[in-house]
Amino acid sequence: MILVTGATGKVGSEAVRLLAAQHRPTRALVRDPARAPYGGAAGVEIAVGDLDRPATLDAAMRGIDTVVLVTPSWPVQEIAVIDSALRHGVTHIVKITNHKATVDSPVDRRRDHARIEAHLKATGLAYTLLAPNLFMQNLLAVAPMIKQTGGFTMSAGDGRFGMVDARDVGATAAAIAAAPGEHAGRAYLLTGPELLTYADVAKELTHALGREIEYRRISPDEHREAMIRAGVPEAVATSNAQVFGLIAEGDAEWLSDDVASVTGIPPRSLRTFLAEHVTAFS
Image 1 (cartoon, rainbow, N blue to C red):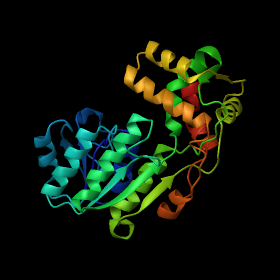
Image 2: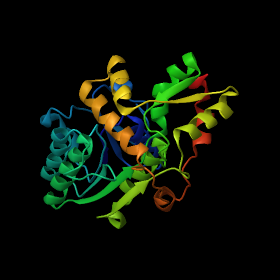
Image 3: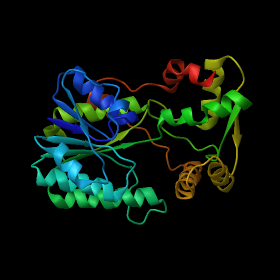
């Protein structure tokens, strides 16, 4: 059986949906079962648990062979999942991580991923790492601004990135979890089909909406302050601003065909994503 954590999120929910469609015995770990969109789906068990409460992880881990590990990348939480998996005889963990996770990264979340990866490797468990580029779904966070002002602000300059649909990341995780053996010890870079800038995103939004959408460039410091004013926790806003500043410097300018090579299906383009979500921006 396969356990998916973060099973109501962008990546985890798609992994659960696809595994259920393939009739793979799957257990979805959720804090609130009312939020599980696949409640009652054939082959899906709902396990109510909390990553901050190890006893609930142990209950969810019984009878599990493979774990798809998706969290906001808090080391204490992910290490608790890994340790529970080790105690209950899990044989493989598929972890969502960051392509540039290093112990000396200037970005907190990347250092956190590096710490989690080191712990996972030290256990001796078989593992596969999935490192996505920017998520297309993150554009939905600026949808209200686009509706109200006809544009959006960002501090990524003219940096290019291989933006990927979270559903394609979930599909990759599901494909690996269904047959993990051939992917043991591998790391996959997950991107969409093209390198984009936020100016390109504005052009695609203009095409999708039939009205001009403006990309307004601001500095990382200005972006950090704007996020804090919008209610983003200061530590998260600081980390986000660091990442956008790095994007401006070319940090996310990479593409890969790993989504297609693992799933057999090409990743979705930004134009496809926007066409499917156009009402969110209208």
